[in-house]
Length: 361
Image (tube, rainbow, N blue to C red; front, top):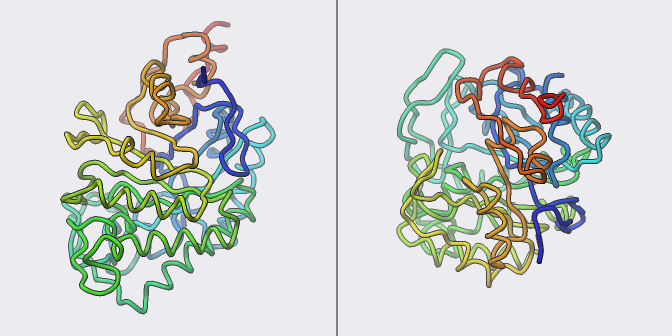
C-alpha cells in the first residue's frame, strides 16, 4: 500500500515523500517585490517536504497586486531568489515557483494601473494595499491582441525561475486569479475566441501551459486549479464539463503534475457545497494528481488509498510546522497556526515556529 512517506515522481522531479507544501502568500518581500533574507530561512526550514510549491510569485508588475509579495520579472528579483533555492537544495529538498497573475484582484494603488481581466467585472470586497484596504476596482477587459503578452509574461517568469534555481514552475490557474477568471462563466462574459463555450474559456490556460512547457519542459511544468465552488467571486454554473475538459487538455500537454484545491463544506479558508471534482477529473488526467485543502494525516492517507490522489499538499499545517513530515511520521501533535501573523512582515509567525526536536530538547 502506498503511504504518504513513499517517494513519487512528479515529472522530472523525484519527491522523497508525498507530503507536499502548498503555495501560500506570506508577504515578506520588499515593496519592489524582491525576496528578503528571512525568506531563505523560511523555505529552508521546510525543505523536508517532498516538494515545496512556493508562495505565488508575480509574473509582471501589472499582475501583482498584493502588498509585499515577491516577483520574478526583474534581474534583482531573480538574484534574490537564488539563496532561497540554494538553501532548499542544500537540505535535500525540491522547490518550484508558482507563477501568478491576479487579474481583477490587483489594485491601481499597488500596480499603478487599472486591473485587467477577461471582462469588465470587479472582485467583491476590499483589496489590501500599502495604504490600507480599498474596494476592488472594475477591471479593464484585455483586448485580444494583448493576450499573447500575458502568455509571454508567463514564459519569461518561468525562464527566470529556472535561472534562479527553481526545479520547475506551477501555473496559478486557481483561486479566482486571472486564468481562473477566464475559465469560469461567472466572470468571463467575452464573446470572442476566449469566451463563451468551454473550449474557448480554457484557451488561455492551454496557451500559457503549452508555451511554458515548450520553454522549460513539460516535465517541470505543473498547474493549479480550484474546480469546485466560488473563490473571490469567481464561479462556474457547471464545473464538471469545464474542468474535465481542462484536465484532458493538460494531460495531452504532459505536465509534471496537476494540483487541485478543493473546498469542503467545513473548509477553514474557503468552503463550498459543490462536490469535489477530482473523481470526475481523474480518468481524464493520467499524470500525478495532487489534492489540497483541509487534509489531516488520516484523510490524506485515505485519499491516496482511494486511488484518486498521488500526493497531498498541505498549506497552513506547513506554516506552523516546518517539520510537518517528521510530525506525521511520529504521530506528534501539531503547532497551531497564528492567523494574525500570516501576512505581517517580520519573523513572528514566519520563522519562529518550533520544530519537534526543539520542543523535545
